[in-house]
Figure 1 (cartoon, rainbow, N blue to C red):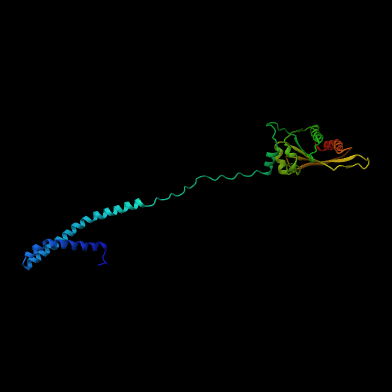
Figure 2 (tube, rainbow, N blue to C red):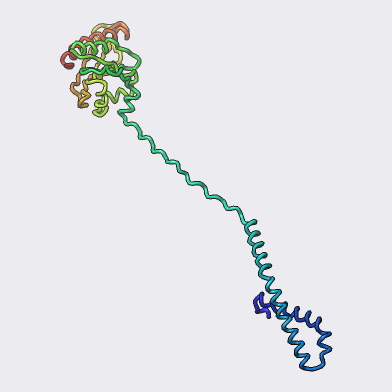
Length: 267
């Protein structure tokens, strides 16, 4: 009987219980029946009553089982774990990295002071002159600008002080074609030069005097082509009782020599 389904096993128990109860109730009646036929009829009635009672009980079971099933479902829903929501998918668009400025654009941003709009004219020249160390030679710069103006051109001050020293000046003096053409927005020609000074030494001809040699290396660059149109050099020696006097005299001689060379170079 252990191999029977749980439902059938319960059915047999129910029928047995009903039969036992019905037999107990009908026993006084069957005891009074003396004939075999009478006893058979009584037993048949007992069996029919048991079967009828069984089906009456079975009719009530589906409703009870349904209620249990509903209770089980509610219990499962009540105790089911709360689902963990998935992390939201970000809809933000990753910005593209800003392209790095070219060397030319960086140079212009850091070393050029753009003139006022509408001031650009044809034939404008820009001048950048580097001086050695802490020494200054303002007469050299004035001589260069004067030579440009005397040749029928104009000058425009587009370079900041930072363009006259360090890496910025080295880039200008190297006459990089791309940088030179980029500066064509502000001028047509660039005169770039540097002054170098020799160490102070004694004058071999006059005892007690000191000599200083100043040298100017210059280039004229076209911003339309990026090419060097002219390259020149001027040099002068100055003498003095001290180093400062020797430098001043050397600058004066250099300016004179430089003016002569610029008359042929600036056209």
